[in-house]
Image (cartoon, rainbow, N blue to C red; front, side):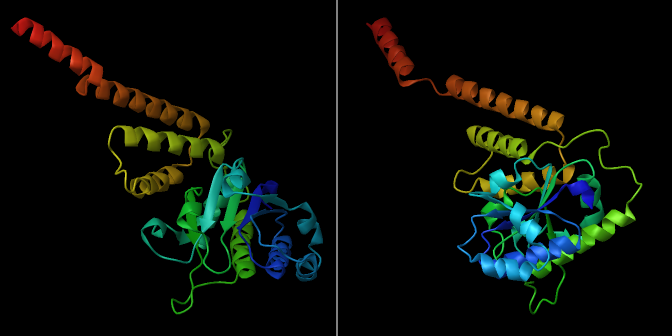
Length: 265
């Protein structure tokens, strides 16, 4: 499935049994790569017991101290959420997004990211995601168990892979920029926008979330990222030079005062 390009990333998982159940769901759908970000201490017995015949998935799992490194080599990072709010309004049903994700995974590594069992991904976690998906559920209780959420998402991708077999992959012959490069681009753009006063210093991430949303939909290639990094450098240069032209230094101002005094005398 997905040419082995799909990675399931569990951020701060709290229970060994849930991790084992996730491994079993992955095995059912042919997904092999599991990564844990800052997992809580857990007993191996429960994860192995719940994994049943998916212990090979557990044996190959990798652990990371932060989400960034866990998805750094991925061309597409898809976060999952069941919550509303301004920064999550762009989330779409996983069934609608699955065909595009499956096609992207035919040429790129893709990370599907799930948050902790109690409250899901934080707004800070979302900064590492290009796109968001959600699982439609009864509004009275929309929160889905972690392992069930992984199963539903992987199932939709499993079906989408079969449905899109033989179709031309997204950006055929090219590779999307890695999450590490995209994150660097956003950091440089953020600094550049702050330098020219485009972002409000008390809440700069409010506008940056909008940039992450629409640039995430664009699925940037390395050439695109290089252009935007060049734009950020040019904005930073302009901001520095504009500041020096409009706001003379203290020493320069002092020299001007002295010159005027000498002329007056």
